[in-house]
Image 1 (cartoon, rainbow, N blue to C red):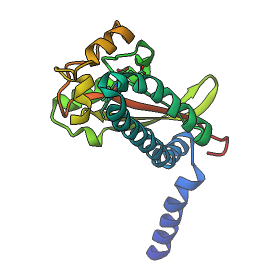
Image 2 (image 1 turned 45 degrees about the horizontal axis):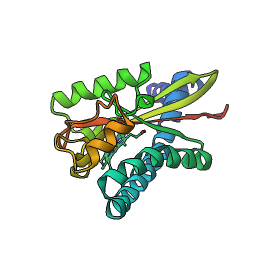
Image 3 (image 1 turned 30 degrees about the vertical axis):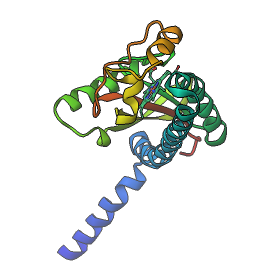
Length: 199
Ligand code: HEC
């Protein structure tokens, strides 16, 4: 009798989550499924930028590479959106291009990353998936922290590469994105993709 009762109880408990799958469970599943996709898109933007930057630096010098960076990031982002449906941008607490200033939700996440970094947490672990409604469309908003690497210092460090300071002040009179050291939090990738009605 007791056995029967336990079996019945187990069946009810096991069935419960599926039967009662509410918006929260749906959101959790969507976030998990989309985070993987978002990370693959980020990898493509990061790799694309780094490859082109290296080539540009060799061909045109660091000053010329500034121009490449200016045109390339939005261009690769547009191509990725076309191909994958993910809208991707880079943002930061201190920006070079005012267009990259954080939106309120991004600002919250960036501040949380900065606080975690100040406590000694590794930037590599900082990523956030949220389900958001934008313009009436339910979608996944994914963010991932961007660390400063050695290769970034010529354009974001304390001592800029020759020719870079001039190119930067000409193109970005309000530039705040200098003075970083290797390992600092530079900013974050921020992605959004609408979900299908069944996701
Ligand atoms: C050749 C110079 C150059 C190098 C090297 C460089 N950047 Fe930048 N970075 C720029 C320019 C120019 C912009 C502004 C792009 C724009 O107009 O959107 C920028 C913008 C950014 C932004 C967007 C937020 C903002 O400040 O506007 C991030 C994030 C960023 N860079 C991270 C990095 C990281 C990480 C590295 C190293 C892996 C790096 N950059 C290397 C020139 C450079």
